[in-house]
Image 1 (tube, rainbow, N blue to C red):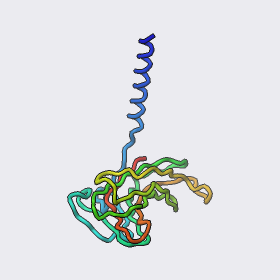
Image 2 (cartoon, one colour):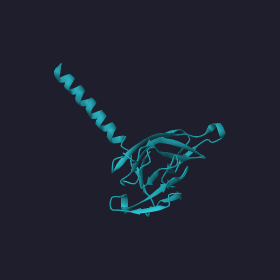
Image 3 (tube, rainbow, N blue to C red):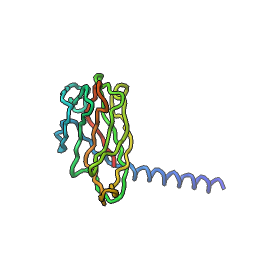
Image 4 (cartoon, one colour):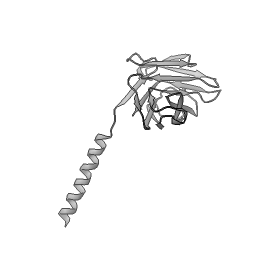
Length: 172
């Protein structure tokens, strides 16, 4: 009886360890001002910062905009489908001047945005920070039969803040 139980536990453990290996997806990593084959759209993040603490040595910052965004594009490396899918995002932050208490992070797809969440850049760890997960789906109500997620962004979400844009990791 004990041997059967132990065999069962080992089999279940093997299944779960195999499942976790299968579900550990690769990610896309995009730095601000990326020179690794990606491109970015800078809409108001005009302060260029350099420091060894920044990912690949530099970052961008915006101050006092009611709305500005920094878009990380990964065209050709994104995901396209006719059904919904989940996307997870991490942001690299390591600058004491990034003080926005509610920077908004979004995925862009077919004329709309899907929100990952809000990150307090003032208290974020000086490394990769989990932002959240977004469900990207076709906007069938306006005639789209598919959706493509080929960029993500950080938005200022209000005036009177220093919002930073350094690097992002996106998991499909």
